[in-house]
Amino acid sequence: MRILSIIFVFLLIQFSNLISEEDWIAFPKSYKDPNLSVSTGLGFSKLPKIIGEDMVQQVPILNFDIRYGSYYDFSLLMNIKTVFITNHFSAGLMWSFDIGHWSFGLENSFAFWYGFAEFGGMDASASGFVDYPALNIGYNHNDLYISMKFDASYATLLNRKVGSISVDESKDKVTSVSASLNIEQPYLKNQFIFLGFKLNYSRYFYQSWVAFATNKSWLVIPEFQFGVNLW
Image 1 (spheres, rainbow, N blue to C red):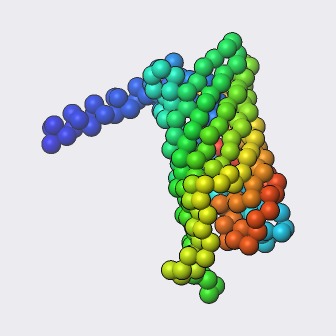
Image 2 (cartoon, rainbow, N blue to C red):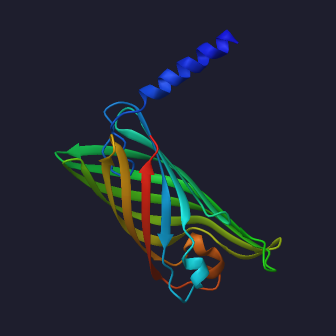
Image 3 (cartoon, rainbow, N blue to C red):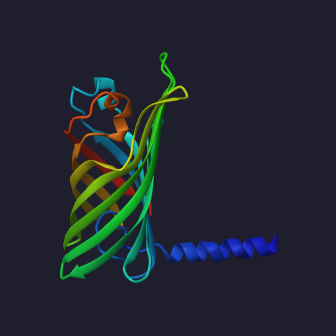
């Protein structure tokens, strides 16, 4: 029992050493020392009428972001998005460098998402594997962290089923390109808040996979995000 207590205290000390005032998540600047930042928030997307009913458009998605800044200006990125019937998990790396007040980040993340609809007489599911290459550019002015991120979605596999029968499958195609504006600022003893606006040009938006099953057109879809750092 004493050994377990010593191990617990040791891990607690190591964890506390990872917490610092550098708690930005989206901003591409690297941390001075190894640091862990975790944030949570909500995301809202506005779908065109052609692909979604009002009840689908207005459902917010719960978002968790984890960033672990390591040595040599590398950061490990993890993200979880969920709205129960649709779930998205991603992990990747970012390498950062600074020029004055400007910061730049080269990113690449891989994701798996899964959705199911077993209600109202429906028995459908969908899943996919996606690669997200991205370029992140940020500017810091008096603790106001503003960044622009440009990324693309490259689907290595998309699959939709009705029951156990596959009705739609595609591989190796670009499904969207997007640009996002993110603003982060410390608030209340260096606890960061996050505001983001993202504009997607997409032909397969995973959050509305049921509606997109019959639509392959390229459409503009805006997203809004709000978040706060847990530590």
